[in-house]
Amino acid sequence: MTTTSTPLAGAEFWKDETKGLAEPNASESLTLTAERSSDASLAHCWSIERWPDWREAAKQVKDYALTHLDELLTTFVEKLEAKGVKVYWAKDAEEANRIVLQIAKENNVKTVVKAKSMVSEEIALNKAFASAGIRALETDLGEYIVQLLGQRPTHIVTPATHLSAEEIGRKFAEKLGVPFTAEHEKLTMIAREKLREEFVNADMGTSGANFAIADTGSLCLVENEGNIGLSTTAPKLHVALVGIEKIIPSAKYLPLFLNMLPRMGTGQKLTSYGHIFNGPTEGRDMRVVLVDNGRTRALASKNSRAVLRCIRCGVCMTRCPVYRQVGGWAYGWVYPGPLGAALTPRLLSIQEAGKLPFASSLCGACSQICPVKIDLAHQLVRLRAEAIEARPKSTAASPLDALTWKAYSFFMKTPLRYKTMMFWIRFGARLTPYLPVRPWLLGRWTRGREVPKSPGTFRDWWKKNRGASKR
Ligand code: SF4
Image 1: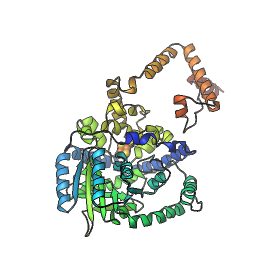
Image 2: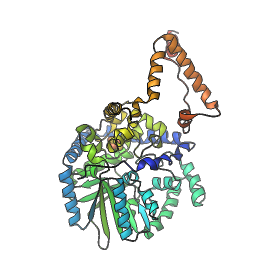
Image 3: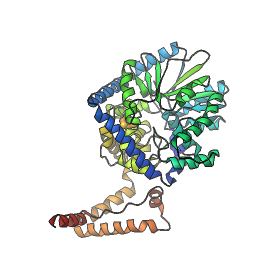
Image 4: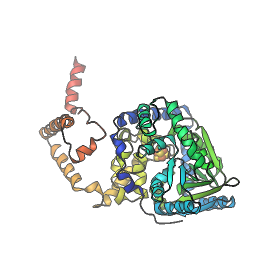
């Protein structure tokens, strides 16, 4: 197994691709769908009496897999190879892209249909395909929409969650030349019709994997739309990109995870489809690329290893009060929300992604809901400490931070100073919407959201409510 890894290719890739932040109703749509989805997930956990046991079992299985990864990966690869699957090891994003492009070149691939895969986002595979002159089309409906708009996914499970049906209808009419509709079924049929011929004509299909089963040498993928089934079977060549942490020891644990993942991810009891790949069928070719890209580094300690338990359900994002307001792009990395804040600095380094752990209120909602019991809030606290240790490169100790804390300390020292500070904050918040130019951070912060109304001081609240209770 490799011991080194280069940064996510996502860094540069994301910088110029956050224009979805400017979607007029992004914040509203995001909050609505996030609330709906996480309420459904919560209802499912509460309805299962033994949910705490399920979580504990899932945690233990993943912990076992992570501490026996070398053995399990060896078994997995042996079983796959025995079935005629060619397996590759990629230590980082660059190598993973190089391998996929080499496979494409050897097979004279001109067009690719892609099933949803976060690893492919992580390694910026679409950019690699584009640079090699290969046409790659996302086939998951949400991914298809964001690709059509030149945006990136804002959520790891529901990539276009920031757009309402009306907005998607308008974009389809504009980009695809179809009549406007806001009906979900009609929108789906439009995408389906456009994608059908792509499946038939593609030279290669790519996918990720939800679970890699060591004892059978199988890949398990779940979905609701059928596009994974088509992307992986319509073209003659299927290339699966699999993060090495996706291993589970045995197929006997699969029912547990197949029950948990959709309940958390989309609030369903089960997904519409579940696929288990056991090697290529006759006349077809299947390749598996095992991607490290920083995972081996994260395995090094018990604390950092915990985040690799993640099964990418995305529920920590929809529960997160910060994510619900800012969406995925505001984090600036491929994996957003609490998971991204805890995972990205582990995959990259604290120097490069040391800001992320600070993008949290530490309310703990993510830790409470995570089906594999990753204590994300404490992970973030630990990462904050590491970011401060890693000064001066980390932004935790930037001159701006130091100045902010000095000013805070000054104003908190006497009631008069505190009242003065609150007066100016309220005045500034009221004034901001009317400013013709919003410079620097203020401009960036207000690009995709409104300035909230100041709730007033605790003293104001006390005066008002105490007065009310006396009446
Ligand atoms: S960290 Fe937990 S809640 Fe968040 S995506 Fe991963 S498994 Fe789901």
